Amino acid sequence: MYCRLILIPALALLLAACSPALNWREVPLANGELKALLPCKPDRASRKQNLATHDLDIAMAGCEAGGALYAVSVAELPAPDRALAVQVQWQANLLENMRASGASNAAYAIKGASSTFEPVRLIAAGTGPDGRVVQAQGVWFARGTRLYHAVIYAERIGADMSEPFFGGLELQ
Image (cartoon, rainbow, N blue to C red; front, top):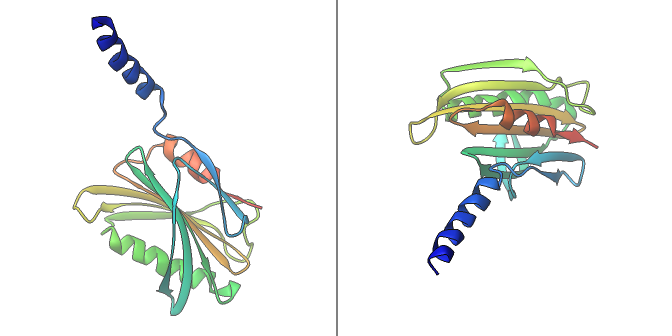
């Protein structure tokens, strides 16, 4: 009996230690046009948002794992040439919401993305709604009339978080 009382909690601790914090899975978005890797089962939502004078329908899939929030969104644009204006406003809103104290942009490659809108990657630091330090890494890319955004928010973002997430973005 005493052995069972010790063995069961020890076995539970061992199994918990073996379960990964980030359980990557493929998630289809935009009717299968985009495949993304998320580290947990995503919640899905949609909302209307005004960006660059356009009321847009934005569909999102996201989840929290390992102390980070991962999200992928797609906005239906009125025309492909509106991608840059919408992306600039979207990025400005993100930086304002996190009270960014520093940010940098760089070109980013996504196979199958539109050649008329160069994909961009953002790295930023700021504070969350609770006043705690937060980092964000995000990318925006387009195909046709769809503008995609993938982002991670966490206190600290490591390569073990960002590489599978951004590397897993694949347009079909």
